[in-house]
Image (tube, rainbow, N blue to C red; front, top):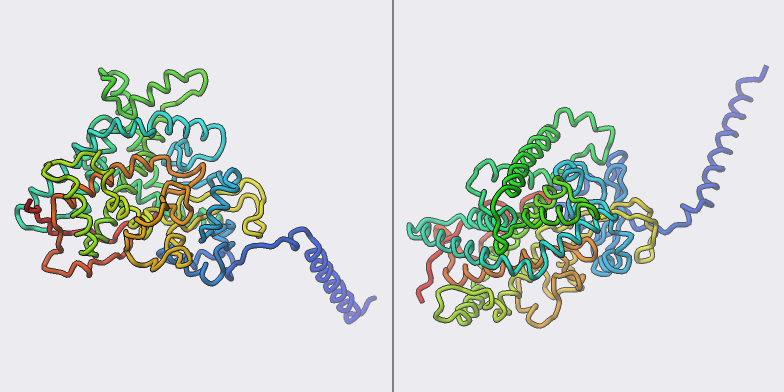
Length: 498
């Protein structure tokens, strides 16, 4: 019989041999020769999820300062490439845009947007190309945006009238609520043909949908935690919102099918139904596709548009000299007229500079919508595997001190001296993304924000309740996919004496 000591020697020798064989094979494998992006230390199972904190865009900026503008993190089992420089963003959204144009499968948007049949979250492919082309040509072209000029002018005038009524009692005005109502009513009229904002259930549905889009459940990254879905209530909330919106949009579509139409007052549902009829054989457009696209318009057209406008006003109030400069420009252009015409906006370069600077400091969606790599490639000399999720920190890029002088300061004047714009051609400023997956609704959103901001500073002088100093207005942020200012914006709006 073999002695115990001899058996242990053989077992130990075999184990050492297998260990060194594994190390040798690993060192000579193709994987070991790859140059991976820098990675901060990660925990078992969690990966780097614990390092995101309550403000992921800020946490990722801090990590990038230590590990570089291109990092490889792991959210549970999911590898995630983090890009935090204009150079990296250009490589991803321009040079290699095609292979970075896919969207990852996200459970919550997938269920809310009819298995991701919308434009924003749809996987890259023929369906996405067709649906995006439809939106760009029929819904969001410059000509179509201009056709809704009367809606914008009427709704912004109603906003001014509402502030005048509320301000007459010398009580603080909840500007957050007023701006939310404005963007919601504009989208309702443009997309659905009439306002639904007064229906409390509609507002509740929309608010809940936007909240859910900002939820990132742990079980999406750590599959063994999927049992927690039975207790966290997320599935029930998704099902409730999806059902409510489906019933509402079904009612809207059926109303549009039977109502009398005027060709000069077509809304987006009318146009989509026309596309459905005209393309029945070439590219069938199902009712669920129409619903998903309309939901896209509400998610992007209300929340981000209102957010950008609110942050601009916050920064103007915090900077009295800046708001005075803007008021002087607007009031000089408008002159003795009582109402601002959209044509007047072209004569207001400082107004446009203010909105650019606000978007630089406060990107509404600071991490944009995630992308996914469809094939292995190199980015800035690093190897990145196919299937890697990609997050571009637009917020960090627009505060990069190597790109912007005094990046933390609100200084619209910087945009009077540069041609940098936010429409996807300059990667120092990408609040709406760029490339194939850039937001197609930029023109629509800015048309609303420019007119609303011009009318507000034209008609009112702003102060804070209880005599608070304007410079002390806080800029604390909320959580979610869209970053709002935390808490309502309460102001004293005094009609300007002309």
